[in-house]
Length: 333
Image (tube, rainbow, N blue to C red; front, side, top):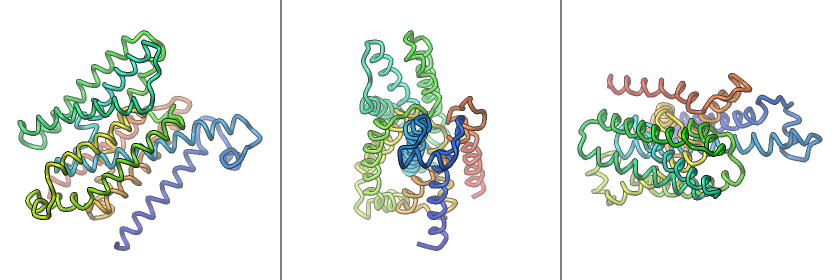
């Protein structure tokens, strides 16, 4: 590993730790750093401070780091699969399909007085993601050109989002109506049970991506080269689809659709590392996604406190320019 890449990983790790502490200390309720640390590591004098730190801010920052990293890795896998720098769960409509199935499942369960378990939300999101992915894959066989594929994915996303909004708007139950904030994207309200379930699913999916690192390295050099190296293309592609859908589904199930993270972060990591090797990109994307989402979530909470912005609003502001820069750069090349 070169000095530049070592510095990149050190910077990402330091930024992740620094932003984690900032998210822990900062908020609409002001807490001194000493009081926050006391509430975190031991039982402090204030029950209010302890509740805010342990039950609200700590789970939220862990969710932002974990889900942001997962979404970034999912985007990188999709970019490898489609050989398209702006492919991502949000742009291709995968996140919107997952959101639709989760919303319909929650409406159905809550209308019957049944609480949907975290694993059930992930399963519903995965089914929605796979349905959207299936439509995109069918379209990729008919439509030629990367631009048309992206347009198709965006249209699928709009359709799924429209159906979701209709279902949420006409829901009668107050708990179902509150799904509106989730449907816009947010890391708030995620508890320790959801964190545990998400961590189990994401760690398993990340382990699968590590196993595919070598085939990915060969595949990025061309399909014929990958076949000559013994890669089973059909199995490899299926693995990329399933793993990216699991990661995107897990994020959508708990945080709703989060825009541009899966596109922008992998491109930023490529620029920092000056490499596209999966062995470097996978950990860099996970760390970078965590840093990006922690930073955006901090701004979402603090810019207009106590009013909170949706996470997708902030990620779009910082992620969209990266996508434009990527398109301009590829055009020049």
